[in-house]
Length: 290
Image 1 (tube, rainbow, N blue to C red):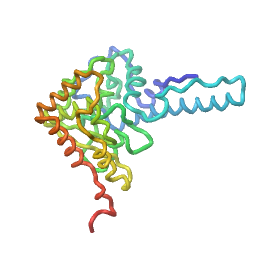
Image 2: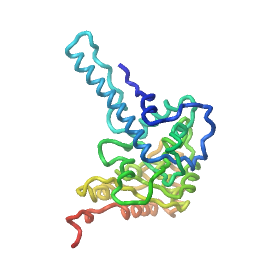
Image 3: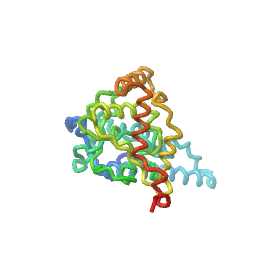
Image 4: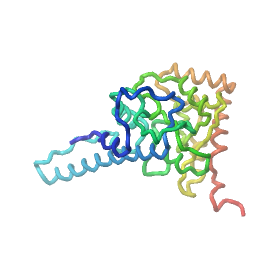
């Protein structure tokens, strides 16, 4: 049984360009905007391919119960089920789709769906990008509770940054954020504030005076206030942020002290930034005065 995604079918369905190392250099990093609508459609195709894998697995499992000639299917890989998050996209989609060129997925995005980015998207790779719920990072951008202005072409690391580079270049993110001047934080849970890179991007926005917007997922009116309560109950401090390398973590914390004066002041800044932009229980229609 084939447990691999049909990447050729995904590319054909979304009009992607060939994985060709001779296509030439991409534009500068900060100019690699991708149309949000195309990006969501691309990820929906990826998710549809995952569902086909699960469906084939289930069909074989049922057949093996009744027919001796049909073997029991091998176990599904973890990435075949659950939400479609950044790690799955990076390792099971982006890298294989750019294996020949060894470049960013941006090089394969159709020309008509490229443009100067009007939004830098800061997101936690562990969070779902799309899925069956409104509480996913890209759905929060496409259908936010509050309007934040246009989000036509977005800069998303998974597409715009070269995922074949083993090192993480913090200065690249600062340069991109400085040029775009606008950072979106799709807040579907407090996870971004437990991740080193999300904190670094927040710090880059602060130090370069870029606009920072918290994009709240658009569920139902019953969900209003839910994210604010969850954030207040679970956010402790930037000092709880995790990173693979201890030295990287310390560098970020030191930079925060330099920017805000202390880590306690950084915590206050994060809380104010988030809570000032999230809906509250009082925003529910039955709680509004008059």
